Image 1 (spheres, rainbow, N blue to C red):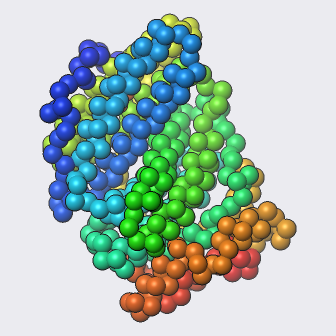
Image 2: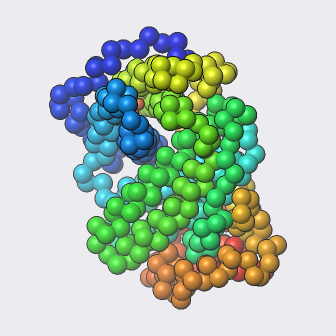
Image 3: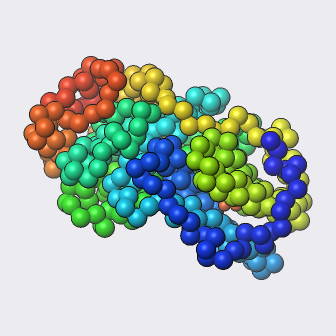
Length: 415
Ligand SMILES: [Fe+2]
Ligand SMILES: [Fe+2]
Ligand SMILES: [Fe+2]
């Protein structure tokens, strides 16, 4: 499929009455977990498009351009509402959160298996273990608060057990900044992967920041606030991979291409017939956006889209959500890595004076008061064991103990 070769529909086709915007939400008891994930993913993608377009608007002095951006952006807003409205009102904040972290795990793993750039793959594998741990902490909160059934929410797709303990993830801000990619040296799939995961992580961060003070229990409020800081680190890491030398026009074209690619992937992967039609409709709208972005690039920067897509614009391998339990188990072997400048190293190999240790101590303070640790200790006290969803024993021995929450792995040398 090559979206540049399709004839775009009329741009105003996306402007439609409210009854075509507010659609029936999915049934939370019947929805496939991966359909829930696609809804979250596409919400995040739309938010990023809108955010980018507003930033562009504020950096542009030409009102003809700003009008064309406003026109496209209005379309994105309608799509944003249609997608976000698929989440039903009876799906709680915490149930939705399990979806966010399952997305973070399974999206990251599915992107990582297809990633050819070894540096990008390292960043994906590194953050994967952190989101994997968040899923476990939220699942235990859910069990404690009797707020739903994490096992039913994730289905058979994803295991739930400790990753790199969240308390170990607080790194000095200097160590989340990555090298950026050169767009001309990387293929379309790598650029797509980076664009997709940055938007998804940003959406997760914003969601936690928005719900933290709406959440009713003190323990839950702690978890959302604490974990949001890790998502900020992830957004810094992933966002830093994007080529900062790309122009505003090129960035716009890439965002529209990403939306085309994702809606088409969702369309091909979706089993719910009704929702599949929404993905198809949005794909057709995005093709119109893409052609508009290509025209803007040509008119105002004198570049043709082929300069940004030297491989011709054909979609690379589509994104398919597939269970990646074995991949995650393999990745867990790197649980003791930490960020060091633009790279990652085993914690044991960094000097004792490295800034990580002082920073991490400062953020955590008394470890017993940290929410992501306390929630597991509370679960152990109440249930006798922590709550997990494992097919077999945890691959890392010291994380297999279900009667003691390990706060040292990846945080204390020699552990
Ligand atoms: Fe869109
Ligand atoms: Fe994350
Ligand atoms: Fe778009």
